[in-house]
Length: 298
Figure (cartoon, rainbow, N blue to C red):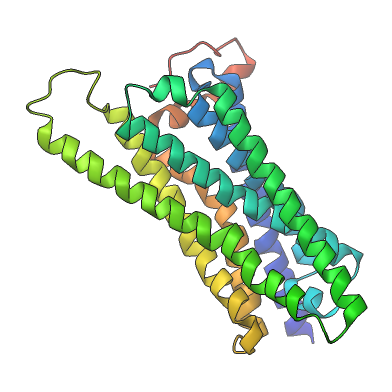
């Protein structure tokens, strides 16, 4: 019993540390984009939406999951479990919808650079963000209604189970992922074509800048990290109907998915020099000594 309690305490400390790192890292991204005017771009507004979702995972979903783990919530559907699951569905679905919007933004930046500034502007991005959060909330409401119906109909809930276990993952995960993979494949093919013809095309307005290529590569890595963390969980979620997934595996994969919200700030810091500069100025406390909002980030 003592050994078991020690392991639980160590696990809680580890998960609590992840929550703190997750919250601080995403808060750095949010402060950087809000404070530095150079980062006030439509692309970064999508990134700040993703960071807000990841921040809420760290300060809301993680603590709820530590006190009410997934395994217990599958058996005892109390109020805390419903709240936890609702936040989990909203935030995870918002993340993947936002990543889908980011892939669209990258497609226009790389494949249609001449019209990018006019087609992907702040009002368009605002609509993308509102739709990402709005649809995610509607999906969460659908989950709640499905659970209520299952309690009423007891055994004859095949339609609700079909909606929850099959249609929901398809529309909230698999379909957006397929769209993102298709878009990034198109971007890759166009970038390869441009690289081959860059010797013959000297007009800077036609070619794609190194910054746009780097941004696309970084955001593709963000999406790749998301897939690595989330795909196993959704596969197990779909296999729940067969009963072939143990609760320990399911619980582990759930924590793995939540930990994805910690990775994105480190990816930005490693690949984006502008974010590295912003992070350094914030962590060193320079922004509290004088106004650096118009500083050139390199």
